[in-house]
Amino acid sequence: MSQPQSNAYIIEIHDRAAGIVTRDQRGFRFFSSERLFDSLEGRQFRSAREAERAARAVFSERSRRAN
Image 1 (cartoon, helix red, strand yellow):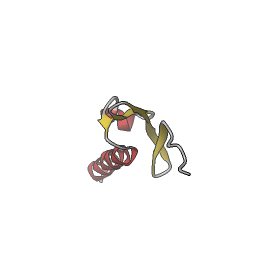
Image 2: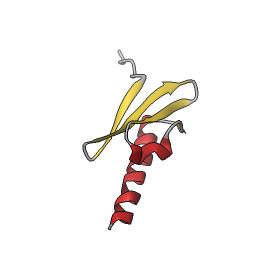
Image 3: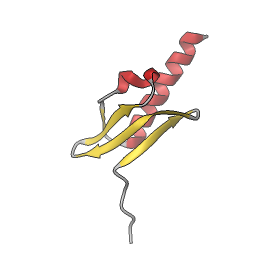
């Protein structure tokens, strides 16, 4: 028996809540919870994992610019 999948996931990057993704008919939509991740606001992703990778990329890029 398989467990039902969740319709929403919190995306955390280095103990920071980047945002949430919610499932819809076309995949997962990102909602930013921190200004750093606003560039992803409203973007559609095929999976929650893909949204997490995008948030990690934003965080990494910001970290590179800060150094």
